[in-house]
Length: 149
Image (tube, rainbow, N blue to C red; front, side, top):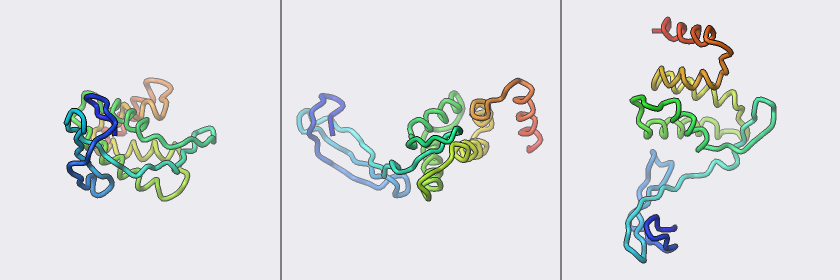
């Protein structure tokens, strides 16, 4: 593991702990050259999970791409990034049961999760994911949300 301070390639593990309810390992490391301490996380890679796009083509699942889009929807909202991280882990467990998941299922699951977490973030994500063609369609979705309360 390369040191983020001096870029030396050798470090030692000072402490290891289970994290994210056993889904990853948090390691505290120390650089052998400059003694800088830093933290790394190890997580099981979902490399075998493929996403079937709207046009039917498969592409490898990219957690960072998904988290980035969710964090954009949650920008300037009172949603801790740790909560998003935890929720995405739960969704990955659901999707990881098979080798292929559709982008529509991912979108529906993320929207359901965001609806519970923050309604404004839900509307932001839904407006991009569902590709609302006009303001009236967006208004109808907003009104549905109001009537559910």
